[in-house]
Image 1: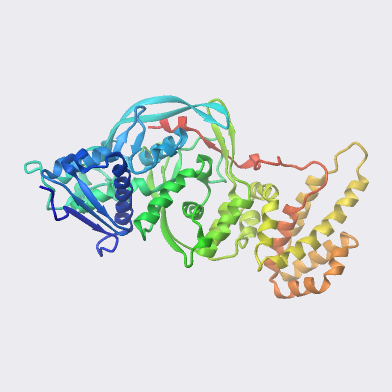
Image 2: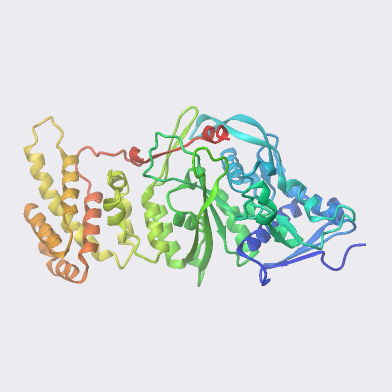
Length: 525
């Protein structure tokens, strides 16, 4: 006889839930939606398990043994494919290519299966990927078992085969942050959950998004273990959250390499159509996992950011994605080199903090950029700066300043071209470096005004300045000198000198080349 009362009831509005519980519920919802298509009739399912789903509730029904029903559900939800890769039924696996499957597999292993107590490693698998129509050899560590697959044994009483009525102890592979520090203290460091909540927490990995985090200042010649950013969204509606997570499978793997926690959060919501919605508000957490040192076998939670996103923030980030250079990848027989565009991450950082998209450029691109690596990235993003300013009513005024500044640059460069002997290349690159160095000497309003006046005079006759004297005067009067200094920097970066450029047209500067190498990961442990 089919049960008329639900065996398990879950609600987004329950007072005793956390963000992790709500994410787990969403992962369960996504999985049940997929299982409905694979097994349309409850007669095809263990314990004749069935469910009733709404936008904010989940109810599970079944007959007979709780263990039979739950073990079927868990077995169908958490699988391994023929090559030892984790296969989550809740994701649209037909829409995921092999490279992204490996990315998800390694992300889950790095974050949720950190302790070897919770998985059994198989062989290191050599496979071949097709990246940009080139063949690449790839290596990853396969699994033969992971703890999610047999968790029904923890949920049910051994003698009665019924759902336990007491609390279930869980550890870090199931609930982020609950870490077994040492075998002698594992009983005191475990967390306790109701059985139904322990079940939902199994499904957290389905909804999380895994990004690889790069520190741009580190020595790229030295191999580093991957740092993972995990985005954990605040859930408002099961169906909306499910569609968003399924949609994220459209992203190319190279897009999942970033250099800020803020961009990881915005990337998670980047495909939302905010133009068709009225009010828009999202919140999430971003967790950074990395190894504390080379000898460490497990990644540790190093940082947590709580991030809130409104409509204007996401729209501006979507524009940055559209108009600035994407990540660039170079393919070699056994490696894929990913060059991360840090400018988008700088913009994301500003947006999340409620600042102008360009507000901290001077600090990041000049003061903290001692080697000039980030400044070099400005040249390949030059068109993006102009388009972003054109699309913003607040920033359009600075386009006049850029035009005046670049007219003066044109006059300075004309003198250099005139002095260059025929057949030789004009030293324009050195001139760019000198312009930046001169701008660096401005430390207060007076020094900046003296620099700007001198620079415009050296540029010769500036027709554009003469035509817009009133607008320029008003802009200088109402704008802080620090803001104008940033736009002077962007004017230098967005200027296109005639002749050869110093950077490739469709790639980012090689100075910031980042390496994604699965072989590093498979040989660490």
